[in-house]
Length: 237
Image (cartoon, rainbow, N blue to C red; front, side):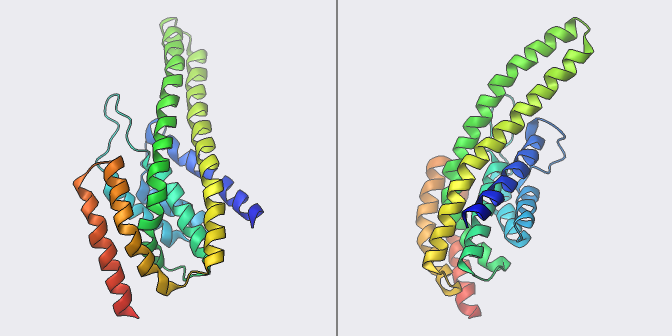
C-alpha cells in the first residue's frame, strides 16, 4: 500500500507542478484552473469523474480570486490537486462505488483538509515570487546591457523555481495525507450508505473552516449542497 501511495503522490505532485506553472509563470492557457486541473489528476489516478466534481466545486468558489497586482490569490490549483487525490484514494481504499455521486457527497469532507493546506501552498507561492524577483532584476540588468542569452537563462531559472516549489509542497503534503486517508478508509470499510452521514457531519466544520480562512457569503452554499446531496441519496435508495 505504501509503495502505491508514494507512486501516486509523485505522479500527482509532478503533474500538479506542471499544471501550476500555467497560473502565472508560463503558458497561461488556463489549464491550471480547477475545472481542468482536477479532472486531469483524477484521470491520472483512475477516476476522472471524481476530479470533475472537485473541479466544478473549487472553480465556483474561487473563480473571482485573481492575481491582480501584488495580490497572491488562493492556490486553487494545489487545492484542486490535493482534494482530488484524497477523494480518489479514499474511494479506492474503501472499495466504494467510484461513481460521480460518491465523489460529490465526499467533497465537503476533504475540502476541510484541503482548505487549510492550501494556505501553505499560498505561502510557498509568495516565497517563490520573492525569490524570483532576484532573477527579474538580473534579467533587467542583462536586458539593459543588450545581452539576450542571460535573459533567457534567468527566465528559465524562474520557471524552475516555480516548478520545484510546487512539486515539493504538493509531495510533502499529499503523500502523508493520502497514506493516512488510505489507512482510515481501509480500516473503516466505508460503505455507500455512510456517505450522507459523513457529509452531513462535515457541513458545519467545513462552513466554519471556510468562513475562518476565506470569509465569504458563498459559505452558505455548503449547507444547502450537503443537505441536497443527502436527500437525493436517501430518495435514490
